[in-house]
Length: 206
Image (cartoon, rainbow, N blue to C red; front, side, top):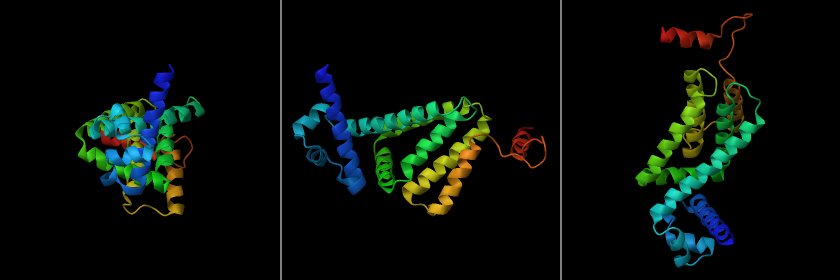
């Protein structure tokens, strides 16, 4: 048992070392030598756990995805059993990740690695398929829920790549609006009237 714990702790040490390098220096400088130095391990000690850079990159993606999904589950538990709970947790976890500039640089480097390593790209595609399935099952109109997910992802990518991200005040307004939309389409002003967004969804389907 202790040997397995030591292996788990060593792998976490390696992943955190990778993350610091990506935050500071980007993917180009994420070499096995740099990781072993950052983690305080011998090159042989690193290769024992990850014999190739590709295996390290794949496991690094899994590590960060696991952290993300663990955070989603924590947030889901805080939600009442209401429509949109999983979508709301996805939105909160995503926004928590990206509003920290250090995290933004980390994920920019990770996604650069995704483009270079086909196996990491396939892993992310499978993850998004699973997340989308959960979002569509969150007891909101699936088209509406998907639209909200696209808003979350759009903010995420704008912050990550610095594609004209909003200023802090506007970003908070957008975040507040996204959270309100995770509870369903906006309502019209009339009493008991069908929401204008829901009417639109029904019209384009007819």
